Structures are given as C-alpha cells and as structure tokens.
Amino acid sequence: MSSTTKLRSLNIDNINPHVKEAKYAVRGELATRSEAYRAKLAKGHPPTPPDEPLPFDKVISANIGNPQQLDQKPITFFRQVLSILEYPPLLENEEALKNGFGYKQDVIDRARWLLSEVHSVGAYSQSQGAPGIRGSVAKFIEERDGYPADPGQIFLSAGASSGVNTLLHIVCAKPETGILVPIPQYPLYTASLAVLNARCVPYYLDESKAWGTDMGAIRDALKKAKSEGTDVRAIVVINPGNPTGASLGPDDIRSVLEFAAEEKLVVMADEVYQTNIFKGKFNSFKKGLRDLQKAVPEKFENLELASLNSTSKGMVGECGHRGGYFELVGFDPEVAAQIYKFVSIQLCAPVIGQCLVEMMVNPPKEGDPSYALYRKEYDGIFGGLQQRATALFEAFKEMEGVEIQEPQGSMYLFPTITIPEKAIAQAKKENRKPDEFYCFRLLDATGVCVVPGSGFGQREGTLHFRTTFLAPGTEWVGRITEFHKQFMDEFRD
Image 1 (cartoon, rainbow, N blue to C red):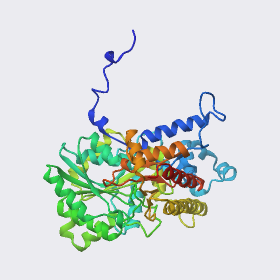
Image 2 (cartoon, rainbow, N blue to C red):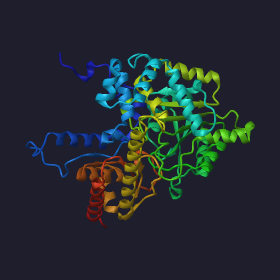
Image 3 (cartoon, helix red, strand yellow):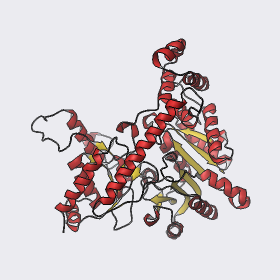
Image 4 (spheres, rainbow, N blue to C red):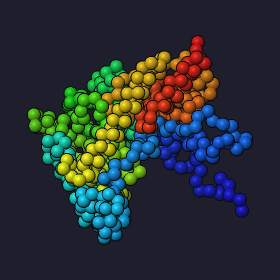
C-alpha cells in the first residue's frame, strides 16, 4: 500500500500551530542554501555536469556564532581534561600522559577532581547540576562581582538557550503573558514565546547611542502592551548585545533595574558574551542589583533576577558540548522549586558540558603548569576576534550607503544599509524583504552567509544585516566590499 498524506496521522494543518508560527532566521533559508553550496563545493572541481561552477571556492558561515566551525581552535587545557573524562583509564599511566602527550600535572589533577564529582560523564548528574561544579560557578560569580553567590541558586544547563527555555516556561502562565524583548534581538526569544503562545513586547534599542537602552522606549512599550491587555511579567536584556554588539554601562543597568523594581518585572540578563568585550569592561546585572540593594534595600530586596552564561561564546567557543548555567536572585523558594521540577523533567544538562562550565569559570591560574599556554591561546583568540572586528568595521565605514557602530563586544556587527529603490523594487518582485534580497545576492555572489536584520527585528524603514567576525583571515571581508560596490552599481537609480 502506498503511503499518502491521507494515511498519515500528522500533516502540516494539524500539528502545533505555535511551532509553525515560530521563526528562527539564524538557521533559516539562507543558512540552508549556504549548506547546499558547501556540499556542492565538496564534490570538487570541475563540477559534474549539469552543475555550473560557483563564483567562489569556500562558504563563509558568518550567520551564526559557531566559533569552532570557523576554525577557532579549542583551548588545550579544556580538551586535555575532557579527553581524560571521556576515557578515565588514561589516568592509569600518568607518566605517558605527561612525557608522551605533554599533559601537565594540573590537567591530570583537574580531571581526577571532576571525576570525583561526577563519577562518569556518561552518568546522569543531579538535575540542577553537579554540586561541586555549581560551587565553582558560585566562586567565579563572587570573585567577578564582589558579592556572595549561593550554589543552591545556580542551575547548570545545556547552553544558555536551555536556561532561557526553562525560565520562559515558568514565567509564561497564559496567552496574555508578555515579555519585554529588545529589538533587534536574538530570535531565540521571539521563537520561544511563539511556541509558548505568549506575547513578545518589543522595545527598540537606540542606534544613535551605540544601541544602548532607551528607557523612554521601554516605558512606552510597557504602557502600550498593558493597554492591549498584556500581562507583562519580565524584561530581557542581552549584554553585550546580540546582534548589535553593544555593551551596557553601570548607568544603563541601574536604570533597567530601577524600572523592573517599579513595575515588578523579572529581569532576564543574557550575559553569554561577557568576555567578548573590546571597549570598556563588562558590567553584570548581578553586581548592579547588589549595589542597589546595598544602597536602597527596601526598594530592591525582592527584585527577581536570572542571569545566564554559556561555554559556547567567549574564548571557549565550545558550542557543541552544550554547557551553560543560570543564577537565580530574589526568587520565591516555591517558584525556585518549580524551576527545579521543570529541569528535572529533562533529567540533567550534559555532564561533559557541565565539566566545561567548571573549567570556563575556573581556568588555569598564574603559577599553574598549564597557565602560560592557556594565556597564550586565550589572548590569541581574543586578539584575532578584535582584529577581524576592526577590519570589518573599517571596511563597512568605506562602503556606500552603510552606517556602522564601533564594535564594543560580542561576536557581531550590525550595519545599517541603504540600497537603491530599484533594488527594493526587485526584492518585491521576488517576494523578499529588501535586506533579505541583499543577503541572498551576497551569498550567491561570494559564498558569505549573513543574516538580514528583519530576522532580528528593526525599526520600520531601516535595513540591516548581522555578520559574525569569527571566520579566520580578512580575505572574505574584501569579498563583501567588492560585492556591495557591484550591487549598488547594478541597481543605481
């Protein structure tokens, strides 16, 4: 009997409509086409007829913050420890590890300690995460901010995305629940809210002020949402920003916290790029809150803050190992118990990812045998990112119709583009948004895959695209500038 749609239980019309509604531009049609090009190139040259040769020899995946896909090298200390965790019998011959493979004593000691905490990376841990690892996270937060952290309020997660999913499931109690989300934003938030059948309440960042928060815009967004019957329960802040790269100062953070206290909103601080800072220094929401509680305890005593971090970004770049954590501050114990129950349903975060979290927050220190190499690798990665960010920034400044903010942090630039009316008209003919049309043309001509600003949200009448600066070298930057000139000439009015 042939298989037909009528014989199947599921079809596109009877699956969860909220999943269909969700959009995730970072891995959308552009990314799919770029992978098709990558597969075609892998077949070799010349292509097999009837395939036509491509005008480029390499695909640059500048659409997603995936460092090691773009040749960022893993930190040696991390991977050496992981190798022992994956195969503990290596510890039976420490001399071979040290003399034959260059493992330092602190690598072996860290692996032994982690194995004593988790027993085996193939076993489940406690649902909240291994206690010893949560203790290391708490110590890191305390050293970073100058205020104590409670390991009992720290949850290890499968990257920060899993933590976001957990928190939104807890907060979004009904279809009228609203979450204030910065625009432009990482589409994880809007997609997750769509799946939960909750409401995104957008507030626009101020591009004229290096994509800083605009408290007037936030208050207006809240007022409008309330007038429409939305029960706004939380505000999301991404610091440093994705896709904008903006890094918030203490005054911006204080303003958001004061607003949240006045309106009784949970603050979700997405801080996964906290080590990707090129200008100034990272300021955490946890420190900002503790400073305010110290100064005005009665006003901020019960403000709820959830801060998230991840092993996927920074100089660690271990996206595939899925490590992360979130810390709760000021949450009702009964609510925290429900969060624990929710993560328990998912059993636990990947244990190998938990171990990476421990190494991220507790790397080799000065004087440790592995410190010199760790420092060299860490600084080399940071310097390369800063060099490529600067090269892109300088190139964009010279491009016709392009405006760009100086890179401050994260892994992205988010330039504004102004394209000719003829290009906009052609985009309409092809049933595409103008920035989407531009990005497809860029991919088809150069193999460079970026994400249109419409995938992150943008003010009406403006166009942007987001690019990472993770790809090695700067040759591909020239591909973009050359394409842009040809594009502008082709559609010039």
